[in-house]
Length: 77
Image: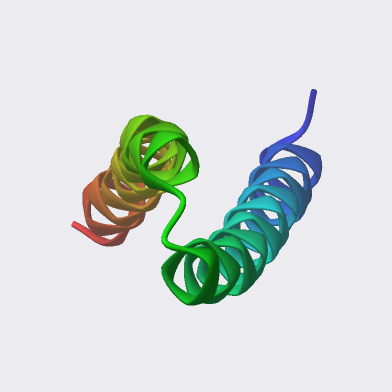
């Protein structure tokens, strides 16, 4: 795969991951408001567990971004 194609693929993957994380955050927030309104402790526990998945998504995005920036620096020197 060419450097350009690899770059485009990484950007698309990053965009897809960020989109998925954003949708997850939106859903978690809506669920949180509902659980608070209903005083649903089981739902609050589920939301908290799901938050760990969202945090892992963020770490994955961060790793891809850092890898991309490292490669960018290496190719400019």
